[in-house]
Length: 140
Image (cartoon, rainbow, N blue to C red):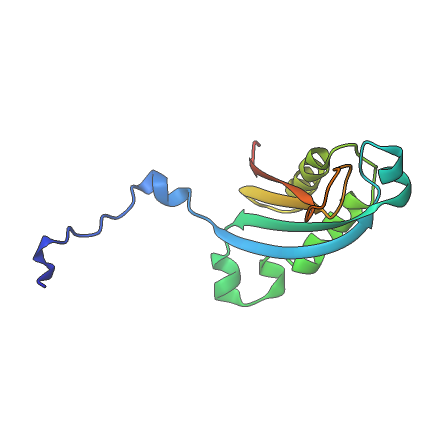
């Protein structure tokens, strides 16, 4: 079939190109913590699985091939660990927001996505847990 009926690809407008970012993902970090609204959740605790996506520009790191030109995933893990093991929260929504703030404070990123999964909670029935995912752009 001839390709003549296929319209040419259009380049994104300059403003649209600036909105496209590279992504660093750190997935399925596991922590034992005591977040929750009930006394049992705070006493017994639960397993939390956290995944984050940091939207940033990785071109310099790709060109220089040096760890100090990028965001070190060990530092990302440490930031998440400190936050999830820090002040106890009632809601995993708050935990996710606090992690996002911590990542903005530590790294030069344009946006962040944070997923916090809790393996069990005050749900009467069998579930695979529940989770919250937030996406936050840099507001600075």
